[in-house]
Image 1: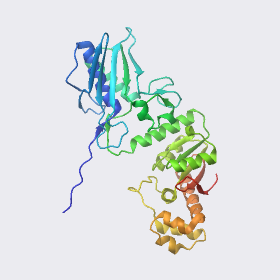
Image 2: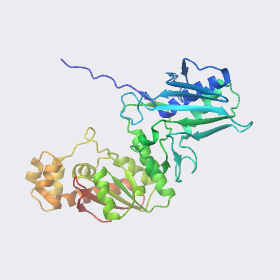
Image 3: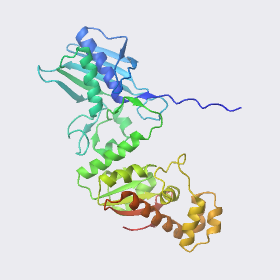
Image 4: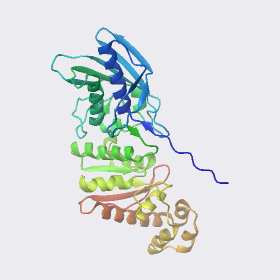
Length: 353
C-alpha cells in the first residue's frame, strides 16, 4: 500500500513577522491596548493572522513580538522572536528604522541598503510601512521602528551575514512574506548578494566552493580571505549565471570529486536529489586521460572511481568542469580555475586559469 507524502507546511519570513509585530505595537501606542491577534496583508494579497508572543508598553512607546514559524523549511531563524518597538518621532520625520538587539547593521557597499543602515531589507520595510499605515487609516507615520531579535547575533553566526558585512545580528528578509519549504531561492539570493558585495568592494578574484573543506583548501592556495568566498553549496548555476551578467575577473571553483563530476557533466544544481553522477560519462573522461574505462564505469560512486583513477581522473574532471563553467559564463570574460579537493580540503587536482 502506497502512502501519500505529507504536504510540506509553509512558513513566514522575518519581514512578515516584523510587519505584524510593528502593526500590533502601533495599535497599542495609538489606541492604548494590544490586539489579541494581528492581521497583515502580504505583497501578493494574502492576509495571515498572528498571535503575539510578548507585549510591553511605556511612556511614548509600545513593543510587540511574534514567534517566527518557518513551516517545514530548515530555516535557522525558525522559532526566533521578532520584536518591533514603536515610538513617536519628530513631526514630519516619517518612518525611521533602527536596528535593535540581534538585528545587524550594513557595513559594506553592494547591498540594497546604504552603509550604516539597519539590515531591514526594502520589501520588509515596505510591508512594515503598509502595516503601520493601515492602523493610521492612510495618514503618514512619524514613528521610529526598532526591530530586534533576542539571540539574533548568536543565530547570525550560521548565516552569510558576516561575509556580507552585516554586523551585529540577523537581517530582516523576505520578498513575499512566505517561506516555501526547502526553497532554493534564499540561498541563491545570498550568493547574488555576495557577488554584489564583492564587486562593490572592487574584488578581482572570488572563490565559489561547495563546502567548508573545499573552501579551506581554496583559501590556502589563493590566500584570499573569507570576504572573497561565496558559499556556493549545490548551486553552481546560481553563481555562474549571475557572474555572467555581474562579472568578476577571476573565479576559483572548488569542490569534491562527486559535485565537480556533476558540474563536468553540465549539471548546474549539484544536490543529490536533483542530479546524479553519470559513471559512464566519467569513465569516458578517464579514457581520454589514458585510463582503463571499464573499472571506472563499474564503480558505484564518483569517490570509488577516484580511488581507481587517482589524480589523472581528478584532473580530467576538473578540466571538464572548467569547460562547462566557461560555457555557462560566456560571453563574460572571466578567468576560471577548478580545484578538486578531498574531504580534508587537500587539493588533489587543479586546472590553473
